[in-house]
Image 1: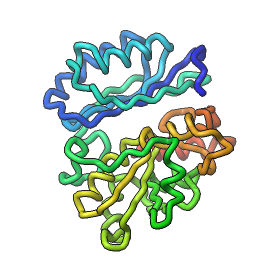
Image 2: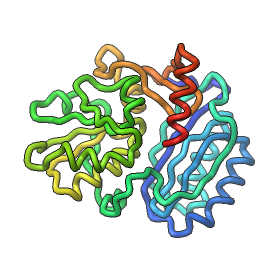
Image 3: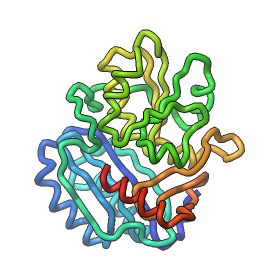
Length: 265
């Protein structure tokens, strides 16, 4: 479990919610985070918010309160997905708040998570689902992330960026053949968009791991885990393990390569 006394606390958060004023929100949000000496990256789009930032524990807690209940978003982030972890050192170099067309890029207007998504499955129920006969287990992450770690038996779509997922689905997935699909990603956000895409294409049963791999690694005991390897994260910690332990990478060259790929994503 994350150490609450750690000098650096990290929060990853997202919510798909209509934000027509997202452009006007950028500077007040940046100023609020800067006032708390937070570093990291936040994306704002009309479809919602997505970010990971780090700082002192009390500063991260203040941000979480503001996002969920403060005046800035006026209560619109009432279903915010929050995941907390710790870092041995500040894992970001600076603060960035950026405006985007999508908070996770797929490029399919029909995939609207604010209207319809797959069925959420809690971490404690995940093993039973992926063990059930007839379930196609699908990793929606990029190939370099999959190479570092994944669930036993998961299909790797072999994509370089999430925007290629729809091409993989069109070429390799069939609603008549793949009746039950269970998908996962790091924190859950890509699965929201991917499940909306598959449902729009007529797939009958689409499930996704609520809170993503990070929630699974936090809650499921290692002795019961079906996860193998390391979980890549998009900051300078690079990889986390069970209990959200900071692992890093032994090979500095590999560390730089993976972080470069992440920044391109």
